Image (tube, rainbow, N blue to C red; front, side, top):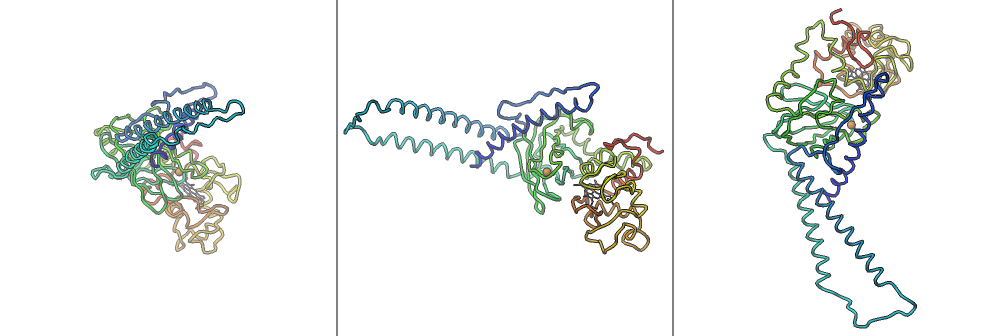
Length: 414
Ligand code: HEC
Ligand SMILES: [Cu+2]
């Protein structure tokens, strides 16, 4: 059973992978009309399965191949015998010949066709069961990474406090993912590693693997398009931008991994205060961009720019309408009937300053809801520290220095 379902899953994943590749290889061409760049990418692996890049992958593939070949043998064998006997014993003419001495039983044959399939099925069961146990028992010394899934991004948090949107792991060492969801069901799937696990709100789930072959790494803004690394998918349809949860896994040798982890943990601290806002996009803004536009276009959440439609149309950018106190409020756990944000911001009120309100909106988004919007924002408590929040608020205040994708185009310190 276990093998059969994983076989189907693998089949499906292969199709997804092929489609995915078709999609990403044509995307750059559409973006740069003037100079079409068609990226070619070799699909590794064979017809059935992508490359096997984790220590447990060969066992999964063995089970897959064994069942596939067994199915071929039985399918063609049985079909052949069926067709042959149908033809051989077809009725000829109108007289039916009945041979009273013809055999009606053949004990060795019947025992054979019962026992052989039984043994095969038992073998398949043990193969699957052993694989299942191996996959669901992370080794004790595994390197732990905390995973938070949210609509529509992954957040990977490393033991030293570093965080990332794409997964980076050490080579030659078991890695255990401790996963939870901030909102709905998600599922983490790394086809090359042959691992997949649901990520469930209100519950922790585990996944482990060991990858021995380093893949190298590229700068953050190239991660989505590089041929390096392994695919990582969300495979549980989780809403509009589900497909934005397609990310990469990079495997680094021990030394490179240590160095990456160190820099990744420190990167915000090393940016001088006056330049802090300039690094908010695209790195931090990436987690907001699925719902909040910069250019004023409407989305799942209110635009940070001057939105032209909906309840906040014409009130100015997020920072302008917040500091002017104009944002209309309707609902939320801290709403006490006020109709605009001005009734909640100010000395002695719920929030002292507009900055306090924005910070609270990020840590506890359900507190006050902007009119016309539901409680659809995941919270970022424990994921964005004070400095990251400072950077994001700084960005909201100086949106004109960023392009629509959140890339910094102004000059830092201006
Ligand atoms: C899944 C969609 C989603 C994501 C991702 C998301 N938000 Fe939101 N956000 C919303 C929605 C919907 C609202 C409006 C309801 C409310 O006020 O909570 C909102 C409201 C806000 C507000 C108050 C807005 C206002 O106009 O007064 C701020 C500030 C905010 N988000 C910041 C962020 C930041 C920063 C991030 C990324 C770190 C982020 N959001 C990621 C959906 C999202
Ligand atoms: Cu998802």
